[in-house]
Length: 398
Image (cartoon, rainbow, N blue to C red):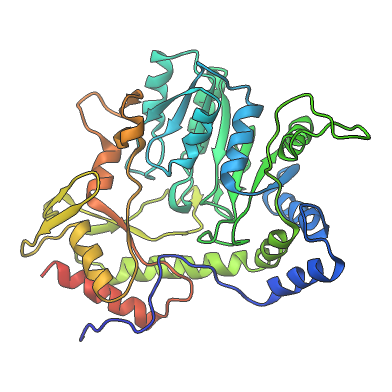
């Protein structure tokens, strides 16, 4: 196959609109509910509860806002320790730092690329007073949620589930975003469904939902004038954005089906190479396949050099590296990304504690980051375009 650059860029994951979203945006416009109250918000919260099984939902400006309020609801403050998934986006733990608490990073396990229960158990032995555990479902794949929650509950720590990437995924038949006492989902522009921005706090605690709602509106008291007895935030979702997300929800299952098809086509198309796709527990876990990722097996891993801001590679026949493959994708006008760089490797968090999965010195998250990458996973990508991408990846191993 001749590999020519695409005329139109193939994205990693971009919004896919269907038309229904515009009806609800138009409704907000026609009724003049253009602020942070309105029917779209009410309906979006209702639909989210109906779909996930959570009792209460609070629509917010972004997933980070939901995480921040979850941390506050958990009573986390200055000097407290919070165990955090190590291989994730910085938003997961920035909310901990907002409240002056101390994140402790828990290493990753190879089975799901999520927090390792063995490392979490070790962390509690080191720090039995940890106040909370923030669990991420990376790239839409559920973590070993039962095991992690059991460990946290045994030590009396609050579980916060960061389900920003996993909306629609299930673990043992239960929707993600419902395993923690407080949970966060995201409607960011690249997520499985989107509002262009926006997020949501999910909980079964009515009092917590009411408190979060108050905090999100600058903590305005129930008084005839503007009165405040505690610090608040401008975190409420716009009724216009809620209209987009409301319209998207009807297509969640369709989006998941397409994402799964993309994942399976990559797995089939890359068969025979020394690579494997991001894994999941096929007995208990059904991801939403938000991003298809791959990792190069050690025997197929070539030579690359990375600094804090640059990367380079040397081509070795029969082998390749994420840096080489990402360059090949960019050359055909397709977008790939490195795996999330683990938090313990980030310059800003280099002094935070990090608990590894094993005692033999293996740093699992660093290893996955070194050998893994995210592939173009856009719903609008055609099979023909994906075939070209697969061919470009295969060529890197020649």
